[in-house]
Structures are given as C-alpha cells and as structure tokens.
Amino acid sequence: MNSNQPKHTEAPKPVNGLNLLPASSADPTKCADCGTNIGEPDSRPWPFPRWCSCCEAKREAECNAALKIKCPWQSKWDNEICPPNCADTDLNDPSFNQPAWSEASKWKFGFKGLTLFGDSRRCKTRIMFEILKREFLTNHRSVKVIYGPQLRDDGKRASREGCEHRMSEALVYPDILALDDPFLAGASDERVTAYLLAVIDARLRNKKPIILTTQVGGEDLKHSAARFGKITESDIQRLDAAFKRLREVGTTVVC
Image (cartoon, rainbow, N blue to C red):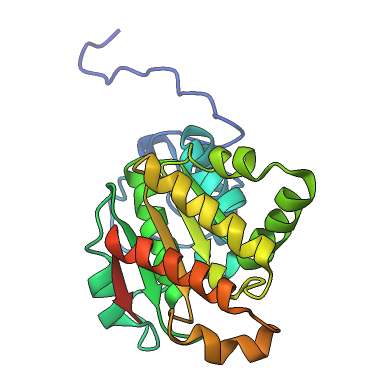
C-alpha cells in the first residue's frame, strides 16, 4: 500500500439519529441528516456539515432538551416557578421600568429583604421574578413564591385548622420567600392579616429575606380598604406593624 495515500478511518455513527459525520465526508450541497439539496455554501472548502431548515430546527430542539436534562435548575424554573407572563421579560423594552430595575437589581442576598412599591403595571412582579431568576439559576438559592389569593386561602385555613404556627414556620425553609401583593389579599380579614404577620415574624426570627410587591403603603391602606371590604382599626394596626418590620430589615424601591 502506498504510504503517501491518506489513511481512512471509520466514520462515527449517528448519535440520537443525527448525522455527526465530519465535513470531509459530507456533501456541503446536501443536508447532512436527510440529504435534501440545499445548494452551494457561501465559500469553498466548507469546513462544517450543513442542514436544511427542518433538520436544523430539530437539532436545536434536541440540544435544548438535552441542556434542560443536564440543567435541572433551568427546567424547574421554567416549569414550576416562573409564570409564563414573566418568562419573556425584555429588560431593554422601552415599557420596562428601567429606573426601578436599576435600583432593585442592587439587592444582594442576605438578612435584609426587598419591598417593591408602586401602582399597578409598574413592572413590580416582573422585577421580582428577574431577581429571583438570578438568585435561583446563578446562585442556586431555593425560592418560594406565594400569590395574594393563595395567601388569603392559607390564612383562612390556618385559622380554621389552628395550624398558623406550623404553616408559617414551614415557610422558613426557602432561602427567599416572595410575596406578590400580600397586603391586598383579604386585607379586611383578621385571619389573613394575622397569618401574614406570623409568616413575616417567622422569616425575621430566622434571618431569612422576603421579597414582596405591594400597591399600598401603611398610610394608603385605609383609603384603599373600601375597594376590598370593611377593615377595622385593629387590622390597620397589625398591617402597620408588618410594614414597620419590613422597613426595618429591608430596602424599599418605588416603582
């Protein structure tokens, strides 16, 4: 055999049905997977395999699925934590509240929490989830998100079953607890406000931060109460106490 002739090695077998043959053995005018004619490449020699649009989309989908298997944090974030309406947040969108995000993004994990205060449609919830995404995916901290209606139902259940302490203490375990508009959830119901205070106290005792969004402050609550039902002076005092605790051990960003 002529020693000057190039040596031929066995081509690698397809992986997961995808043709991973090196470019030297693939026709650059055809799709490397299905063989569809896709025309001449932009330049010769072409060093990589080429694919038709259908096969390229298939490869991308399979690669993304493989990455999610290797990255369970991303899969859990996408499927269990982040709601779809906050998954597509564009930080560069003109409608996004850049000044509030600039301030809120400075928050660092620790004992002190974060309160995002402002009117509706001021990106409070989106900002909250952007911070949670950073802490969950990058720093691998456990997070728990509770929305207003769930907080209202949990407060009534805790009162009905006499398990307020047990339920509030269970919320100590996540590294970060996020509450979305908790002060509007049954604000006129003593059972809900008592449970909310128990949750806040449990987190503070254990030096665990809370990130929350709210449309009302302590002074605004009386004026807003008419929209949500009758609220007593004792309810106002309890909620004012909650605001005071949060201000003492956290940062407030006005959105």
